Length: 83
Image 1 (tube, helix red, strand yellow):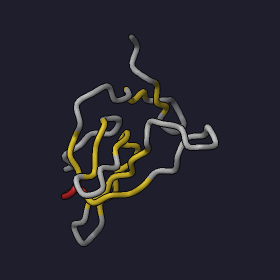
Image 2 (image 1 turned 135 degrees about the vertical axis):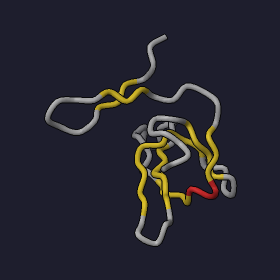
Image 3 (image 1 turned 120 degrees about the vertical axis):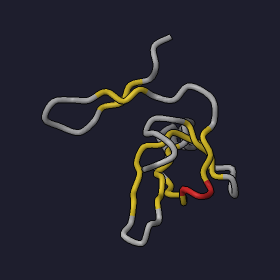
C-alpha cells in the first residue's frame, strides 16, 4: 500500500522537489518510489520531466492536486480540478 495517492501534490523532504504524483512503483525488495512532475514549465516553456523519489523521503503537501479520470480502453487521463 502506498502512502500518497496518484494526482496528489508531494514533496521530497531532502531536496525540496515538489510536484504532482504521476506514477508509483513497488519493487520486489520492498522499495517504493514515486514519479513526481513539477507543476511549472521549464525554461523552454514545456513540461519538465518526471523525477523518481523514495517513499520514505516523501510527504504529501496540501493544495490542489489533479483528479484522476478513468478512460475506456486506454491509459488514464488527468484533468485539473474545476474551479
